[in-house]
Image (cartoon, rainbow, N blue to C red):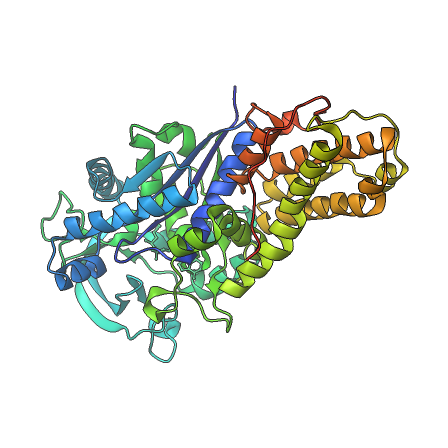
Length: 501
Ligand code: MSP
């Protein structure tokens, strides 16, 4: 039976267009999903939109629009962006879809009946931008610790989820169960949130753009209980490949990865595991990544007005270059800079000089000396031997990085590989060679380009295809098919891969 892999991104708020930070999370998810497919997994990849809440209701009102109509327009832009970026998700879940809403209502009843929900009064400091409550001690100079905006004191009747009953349980899970990677974020959570863990307010009466509970028609479900359950309800959609039980039951064999930005780790590594536990399901596995920051180190966010539109970047640089920058240049887990200069430097220095040129030079030589037909390996070349290219070792190292979700290290391994092959050209100077030696050099080059392009295919989704067309390769990329010999293949015309900026 095929191994199974379930990967999710947060569902994004449709209060505005998405920016490069959102594109980052989704690109990482797409990368791991395509990689797992190459490893022979059956994968399911979910992304979507988190459409309820006061912030959205207010924004729609500002525009004089019905909230559903307002968000639907924005969601079409989300889908357009994912399409342009080559995001291959199976389900796009909207929290306003009936499938999701029905489940969340039922879930409220189920959790009430199990005794996990009670009604009381909430008094606290609320940040409208982040839709979350903070205790006085969590505030920064009286302002929201996440976005820095002014918070307001709120007092209203609310239903609560008994999170605090699970304080010791979640602490133990966080400390011992590898629930969150990178692990250095665990102590942050334990120190800042677990010790003060309170029950979670899960309904509101102050706005009505939300899922109404069956039990009390004044209350709508507050966003996080609504939103987090998308990771369950996505499995009820017609396009779902797996069932809820398959993914979430305690004895599930499905591998799981939930990508989130570091600022929402708290919700995914405290509240979410507890909600799952209340339902008698397994724990999640969360990878928290850092932020994309400007050159001066400031977080990119809509509220700061310093965001970059990914659609424009795709139009300027192409999606392969953008995907590669996000995965390779931002150390997974840490904050990383993004600017036009930085991506242009990466494109010229790496994608053009090292990869695209390697293909172009090899193509030119095979055409010039052998009329476009890949020659055979004739001799055992000293220069090749000395490089000690060990494909199995490279593959193993690459796979280890990927299986540990060290995405930026995985590409470094491939960059090293490309550099070695370029070094091989410099050392052998094929244009000065002839006969068996020349044939052997060019044969090696074509075969290595195939290996590199295959391993990089989950990121460079258009470029690898151009290389495959050039080689007449019809198979879909797979680790099983590496190390082929293209001797005697008639090369097609190669489409240009990357241009110097
Ligand atoms: N709707 C909630 C998530 C609910 S999930 C059950 C939400 N939405 S959001 O639209 O604000 O998007 C949050 C995600 O966007 C974060 O996980 C983070 O990945 C990403 N980013 C937003 N700005 C970012 C950067 N500047 N850099 C990297 N990612 C950031 O929170």
